[in-house]
Image (cartoon, rainbow, N blue to C red; front, top):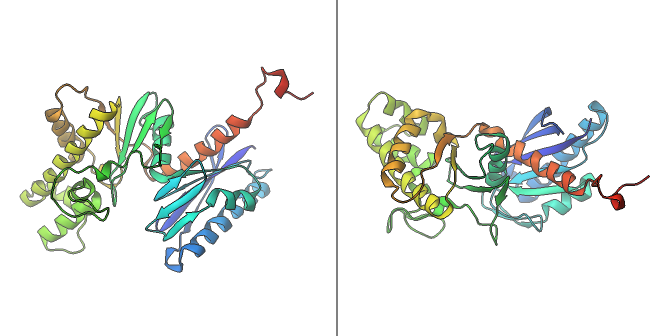
Length: 318
Protein backbone atom coordinates (compact mmCIF):
# COMPACT_ATOMS: atom_id res chain seq x y z
CA UNK A 1 0.00 0.00 0.00
CA UNK A 2 1.46 3.37 -1.02
CA UNK A 3 2.04 5.59 1.99
CA UNK A 4 4.13 8.45 3.34
CA UNK A 5 5.92 9.21 6.60
CA UNK A 6 4.48 12.06 8.66
CA UNK A 7 6.55 13.38 11.55
CA UNK A 8 5.73 16.24 13.94
CA UNK A 9 8.64 17.31 16.14
CA UNK A 10 7.83 19.12 19.38
CA UNK A 11 9.92 20.48 22.21
CA UNK A 12 9.42 17.39 24.36
CA UNK A 13 7.93 14.72 22.11
CA UNK A 14 7.55 13.62 18.51
CA UNK A 15 4.36 12.26 16.95
CA UNK A 16 4.56 10.21 13.78
CA UNK A 17 2.33 8.25 11.42
CA UNK A 18 2.36 6.33 8.19
CA UNK A 19 -0.40 7.82 6.06
CA UNK A 20 -2.07 6.18 3.07
CA UNK A 21 -3.12 7.93 -0.13
CA UNK A 22 -6.67 8.22 1.19
CA UNK A 23 -5.49 9.91 4.41
CA UNK A 24 -5.86 6.78 6.54
CA UNK A 25 -3.44 6.55 9.45
CA UNK A 26 -1.90 3.13 8.90
CA UNK A 27 0.51 3.24 11.83
CA UNK A 28 1.18 5.67 14.67
CA UNK A 29 4.19 6.10 16.95
CA UNK A 30 5.61 8.52 19.50
CA UNK A 31 9.11 9.21 20.70
CA UNK A 32 10.73 11.61 23.18
CA UNK A 33 12.56 14.44 21.45
CA UNK A 34 15.39 14.28 23.98
CA UNK A 35 16.33 17.94 23.83
CA UNK A 36 18.18 17.64 27.15
CA UNK A 37 20.88 15.72 25.23
CA UNK A 38 21.57 18.66 22.93
CA UNK A 39 20.70 19.66 19.35
CA UNK A 40 22.92 17.10 17.62
CA UNK A 41 21.28 14.29 19.56
CA UNK A 42 17.83 15.63 18.63
CA UNK A 43 18.73 15.54 14.93
CA UNK A 44 20.10 12.01 15.31
CA UNK A 45 16.88 10.93 17.04
CA UNK A 46 14.76 12.39 14.23
CA UNK A 47 16.81 10.61 11.57
CA UNK A 48 16.68 7.31 13.44
CA UNK A 49 12.94 7.57 14.12
CA UNK A 50 12.22 8.28 10.44
CA UNK A 51 14.34 5.31 9.37
CA UNK A 52 12.44 3.05 11.79
CA UNK A 53 9.14 4.24 10.34
CA UNK A 54 10.29 3.45 6.80
CA UNK A 55 11.46 -0.01 7.90
CA UNK A 56 8.10 -0.63 9.59
CA UNK A 57 6.27 0.18 6.36
CA UNK A 58 8.49 -2.18 4.36
CA UNK A 59 7.89 -5.00 6.82
CA UNK A 60 4.21 -4.55 7.68
CA UNK A 61 2.65 -2.68 4.76
CA UNK A 62 4.31 -4.43 1.86
CA UNK A 63 6.52 -1.54 0.76
CA UNK A 64 8.52 1.31 2.29
CA UNK A 65 7.20 4.87 2.36
CA UNK A 66 7.55 6.80 -0.90
CA UNK A 67 7.94 10.29 0.64
CA UNK A 68 8.19 11.99 4.01
CA UNK A 69 6.96 15.22 5.59
CA UNK A 70 8.34 16.70 8.78
CA UNK A 71 7.06 19.63 10.84
CA UNK A 72 9.42 21.41 13.24
CA UNK A 73 9.15 24.45 15.53
CA UNK A 74 10.99 27.75 15.31
CA UNK A 75 12.12 29.54 12.18
CA UNK A 76 11.94 27.32 9.10
CA UNK A 77 13.18 27.99 5.57
CA UNK A 78 10.79 25.64 3.81
CA UNK A 79 12.10 26.43 0.33
CA UNK A 80 15.69 25.51 1.24
CA UNK A 81 14.66 22.74 3.63
CA UNK A 82 16.55 24.25 6.56
CA UNK A 83 15.51 24.38 10.22
CA UNK A 84 17.00 27.82 10.77
CA UNK A 85 16.44 28.31 14.50
CA UNK A 86 14.51 26.77 17.37
CA UNK A 87 15.07 28.05 20.91
CA UNK A 88 13.39 24.98 22.45
CA UNK A 89 15.66 22.57 20.58
CA UNK A 90 18.84 24.64 20.53
CA UNK A 91 19.57 24.21 16.83
CA UNK A 92 20.59 26.65 14.12
CA UNK A 93 20.72 26.19 10.35
CA UNK A 94 20.14 22.44 10.31
CA UNK A 95 19.76 21.14 6.70
CA UNK A 96 17.10 18.74 7.88
CA UNK A 97 15.54 18.03 4.49
CA UNK A 98 18.91 17.07 2.98
CA UNK A 99 19.82 14.92 5.99
CA UNK A 100 16.51 13.04 5.87
CA UNK A 101 16.63 12.64 2.09
CA UNK A 102 20.10 11.11 2.37
CA UNK A 103 19.03 8.81 5.21
CA UNK A 104 15.74 7.66 3.70
CA UNK A 105 16.41 7.86 -0.04
CA UNK A 106 12.98 9.39 -0.74
CA UNK A 107 11.62 12.94 -1.31
CA UNK A 108 11.22 14.94 1.91
CA UNK A 109 9.23 18.10 2.67
CA UNK A 110 10.04 20.31 5.65
CA UNK A 111 7.45 22.61 7.23
CA UNK A 112 6.88 24.93 10.19
CA UNK A 113 4.85 23.20 12.90
CA UNK A 114 2.05 25.76 13.17
CA UNK A 115 1.78 26.33 9.41
CA UNK A 116 1.75 22.56 8.90
CA UNK A 117 -1.00 22.16 11.49
CA UNK A 118 -2.88 24.98 9.79
CA UNK A 119 -2.56 23.20 6.46
CA UNK A 120 -4.29 20.15 7.95
CA UNK A 121 -7.02 22.20 9.63
CA UNK A 122 -7.64 24.06 6.37
CA UNK A 123 -7.84 21.03 4.11
CA UNK A 124 -9.38 18.32 6.27
CA UNK A 125 -10.29 20.02 9.57
CA UNK A 126 -12.29 23.00 10.76
CA UNK A 127 -11.39 25.14 7.75
CA UNK A 128 -12.30 22.60 5.09
CA UNK A 129 -14.01 24.38 2.21
CA UNK A 130 -12.87 27.88 3.27
CA UNK A 131 -10.88 29.71 0.62
CA UNK A 132 -9.29 32.00 3.24
CA UNK A 133 -8.69 31.05 6.87
CA UNK A 134 -6.50 31.97 9.81
CA UNK A 135 -5.46 29.23 12.24
CA UNK A 136 -4.36 30.45 15.68
CA UNK A 137 -3.28 27.90 18.31
CA UNK A 138 -3.15 29.24 21.86
CA UNK A 139 -0.45 27.26 23.62
CA UNK A 140 2.81 28.09 25.36
CA UNK A 141 2.98 30.96 22.87
CA UNK A 142 0.70 32.12 20.09
CA UNK A 143 1.39 31.71 16.40
CA UNK A 144 -0.75 31.65 13.28
CA UNK A 145 -1.14 30.07 9.86
CA UNK A 146 -2.57 32.05 6.95
CA UNK A 147 -4.51 29.75 4.62
CA UNK A 148 -5.14 30.68 0.99
CA UNK A 149 -6.85 28.28 -1.43
CA UNK A 150 -5.56 25.09 0.14
CA UNK A 151 -2.03 26.25 0.91
CA UNK A 152 -0.44 28.14 3.80
CA UNK A 153 1.49 31.35 3.24
CA UNK A 154 5.01 31.35 4.70
CA UNK A 155 5.93 34.92 3.76
CA UNK A 156 9.05 36.24 2.07
CA UNK A 157 11.31 35.21 4.97
CA UNK A 158 9.30 32.49 6.71
CA UNK A 159 7.77 34.76 9.37
CA UNK A 160 4.19 35.04 8.11
CA UNK A 161 1.50 34.43 10.72
CA UNK A 162 3.43 35.47 13.85
CA UNK A 163 0.30 36.97 15.38
CA UNK A 164 1.61 36.34 18.90
CA UNK A 165 4.00 39.24 18.42
CA UNK A 166 1.40 41.81 17.44
CA UNK A 167 1.70 44.49 20.12
CA UNK A 168 -1.67 44.76 21.86
CA UNK A 169 -0.55 46.60 25.00
CA UNK A 170 2.04 49.27 24.07
CA UNK A 171 4.70 49.67 26.80
CA UNK A 172 3.32 46.54 28.44
CA UNK A 173 4.97 43.34 29.63
CA UNK A 174 8.39 42.67 28.06
CA UNK A 175 8.48 39.80 25.56
CA UNK A 176 11.50 37.58 24.83
CA UNK A 177 11.26 38.75 21.20
CA UNK A 178 12.47 42.20 22.33
CA UNK A 179 9.16 44.05 22.12
CA UNK A 180 6.79 45.00 24.92
CA UNK A 181 3.09 44.18 25.14
CA UNK A 182 2.99 41.27 22.67
CA UNK A 183 -0.25 39.33 22.39
CA UNK A 184 1.23 36.06 23.63
CA UNK A 185 2.29 37.72 26.89
CA UNK A 186 -1.41 38.21 27.70
CA UNK A 187 -3.50 35.57 25.92
CA UNK A 188 -1.41 32.40 25.63
CA UNK A 189 -2.09 29.39 27.82
CA UNK A 190 1.18 30.06 29.65
CA UNK A 191 0.20 33.70 30.30
CA UNK A 192 -3.16 32.67 31.76
CA UNK A 193 -1.46 29.96 33.81
CA UNK A 194 1.00 32.47 35.27
CA UNK A 195 -1.70 35.00 36.11
CA UNK A 196 -4.06 32.45 37.69
CA UNK A 197 -1.32 30.72 39.72
CA UNK A 198 -0.39 34.10 41.20
CA UNK A 199 -4.01 35.05 41.88
CA UNK A 200 -5.06 31.82 43.57
CA UNK A 201 -1.80 31.21 45.38
CA UNK A 202 -1.30 27.72 43.95
CA UNK A 203 1.94 27.43 41.95
CA UNK A 204 0.65 24.24 40.32
CA UNK A 205 -2.56 25.81 38.99
CA UNK A 206 -2.80 26.18 35.24
CA UNK A 207 -5.00 27.69 32.52
CA UNK A 208 -7.36 24.71 32.57
CA UNK A 209 -7.91 25.30 36.29
CA UNK A 210 -8.62 28.95 35.55
CA UNK A 211 -11.23 27.98 32.97
CA UNK A 212 -12.93 25.71 35.51
CA UNK A 213 -12.96 28.54 38.04
CA UNK A 214 -14.47 30.87 35.42
CA UNK A 215 -17.25 28.36 34.80
CA UNK A 216 -17.96 28.28 38.54
CA UNK A 217 -18.09 32.09 38.73
CA UNK A 218 -14.88 32.82 40.63
CA UNK A 219 -14.46 36.63 40.29
CA UNK A 220 -10.64 36.57 40.13
CA UNK A 221 -10.73 33.90 37.47
CA UNK A 222 -13.36 35.81 35.49
CA UNK A 223 -11.21 38.95 35.60
CA UNK A 224 -8.04 37.16 34.46
CA UNK A 225 -9.90 35.28 31.75
CA UNK A 226 -11.60 38.42 30.43
CA UNK A 227 -8.30 40.28 30.30
CA UNK A 228 -6.87 37.47 28.19
CA UNK A 229 -9.95 37.39 25.93
CA UNK A 230 -9.83 41.16 25.43
CA UNK A 231 -6.15 41.05 24.48
CA UNK A 232 -6.81 38.14 22.13
CA UNK A 233 -9.72 39.97 20.49
CA UNK A 234 -7.51 43.05 19.96
CA UNK A 235 -4.87 40.93 18.22
CA UNK A 236 -7.39 39.00 16.15
CA UNK A 237 -9.15 42.13 14.92
CA UNK A 238 -5.79 43.51 13.76
CA UNK A 239 -5.16 40.25 11.93
CA UNK A 240 -8.57 40.04 10.31
CA UNK A 241 -8.33 43.68 9.24
CA UNK A 242 -5.16 42.82 7.34
CA UNK A 243 -6.09 39.35 6.08
CA UNK A 244 -9.90 39.26 5.79
CA UNK A 245 -10.23 35.52 6.52
CA UNK A 246 -13.53 33.75 5.97
CA UNK A 247 -12.90 31.40 8.90
CA UNK A 248 -10.93 31.96 12.08
CA UNK A 249 -9.83 28.67 13.65
CA UNK A 250 -8.75 28.72 17.30
CA UNK A 251 -6.78 25.76 18.64
CA UNK A 252 -4.28 24.91 21.34
CA UNK A 253 -4.73 24.36 25.04
CA UNK A 254 -7.01 27.33 25.72
CA UNK A 255 -9.45 26.21 23.04
CA UNK A 256 -10.12 23.10 25.12
CA UNK A 257 -12.15 25.35 27.42
CA UNK A 258 -14.88 25.28 24.77
CA UNK A 259 -17.63 27.87 25.10
CA UNK A 260 -15.99 29.29 28.21
CA UNK A 261 -13.54 30.75 25.68
CA UNK A 262 -15.54 30.96 22.47
CA UNK A 263 -18.65 32.77 23.69
CA UNK A 264 -16.81 35.76 25.23
CA UNK A 265 -14.27 35.75 22.40
CA UNK A 266 -16.94 35.96 19.68
CA UNK A 267 -18.63 38.75 21.64
CA UNK A 268 -15.36 40.65 22.10
CA UNK A 269 -14.42 40.42 18.42
CA UNK A 270 -17.93 41.44 17.37
CA UNK A 271 -17.76 44.56 19.56
CA UNK A 272 -14.48 45.61 17.96
CA UNK A 273 -15.24 45.25 14.26
CA UNK A 274 -16.54 48.27 12.36
CA UNK A 275 -16.19 48.00 8.58
CA UNK A 276 -14.56 44.56 8.69
CA UNK A 277 -16.48 41.42 7.80
CA UNK A 278 -16.86 39.17 10.82
CA UNK A 279 -15.42 35.71 10.11
CA UNK A 280 -16.75 32.46 11.50
CA UNK A 281 -14.86 31.78 14.74
CA UNK A 282 -14.61 28.03 15.28
CA UNK A 283 -12.60 25.58 17.38
CA UNK A 284 -9.89 23.52 15.72
CA UNK A 285 -11.01 20.01 14.83
CA UNK A 286 -7.83 17.95 14.75
CA UNK A 287 -6.34 18.57 18.19
CA UNK A 288 -2.72 17.55 18.69
CA UNK A 289 -2.77 15.39 15.53
CA UNK A 290 -2.89 18.46 13.25
CA UNK A 291 0.87 18.80 12.87
CA UNK A 292 1.33 15.14 12.05
CA UNK A 293 -1.55 15.10 9.57
CA UNK A 294 -0.23 18.27 7.97
CA UNK A 295 3.22 16.72 7.59
CA UNK A 296 1.55 13.84 5.73
CA UNK A 297 -0.15 16.34 3.43
CA UNK A 298 3.21 18.00 2.71
CA UNK A 299 4.63 14.62 1.72
CA UNK A 300 1.64 13.79 -0.47
CA UNK A 301 1.93 17.19 -2.15
CA UNK A 302 5.48 16.23 -3.13
CA UNK A 303 4.17 13.11 -4.84
CA UNK A 304 1.34 14.99 -6.53
CA UNK A 305 3.83 17.51 -7.94
CA UNK A 306 6.05 14.78 -9.41
CA UNK A 307 3.46 12.25 -10.59
CA UNK A 308 3.29 12.01 -14.39
CA UNK A 309 0.38 13.81 -16.04
CA UNK A 310 -1.57 11.10 -17.89
CA UNK A 311 -2.86 13.70 -20.37
CA UNK A 312 0.68 14.69 -21.40
CA UNK A 313 2.14 12.15 -23.87
CA UNK A 314 5.67 13.31 -23.05
CA UNK A 315 5.25 12.15 -19.43
CA UNK A 316 3.79 8.73 -20.15
CA UNK A 317 6.09 5.79 -20.79
CA UNK A 318 5.04 2.80 -22.84
